Length: 83
Image 1: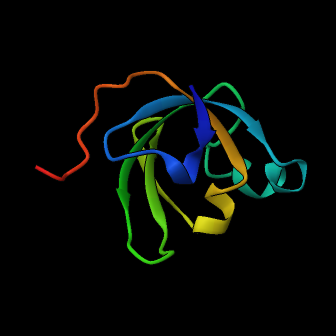
Image 2: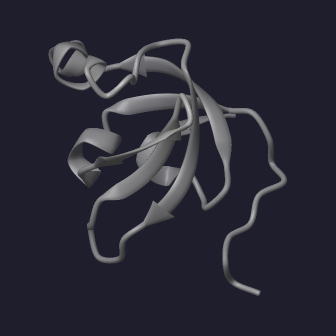
């Protein structure tokens, strides 16, 4: 299933499928490129940043940037922190 990076749940993993063209240069230095595996680490409430893991490194992105990255979710077995 494809979804925006900002819509991923805690612990969910996926492969980056599309990045808005105007952002590619800005986030390439963070290691985020099409084809890269990402994992949602944390999401801050009320439009706060998201923290993802790319290449074993944590990277923080603003919600606006995360909205412009499309990810193919790889596993549906994730922890959402609601237990």
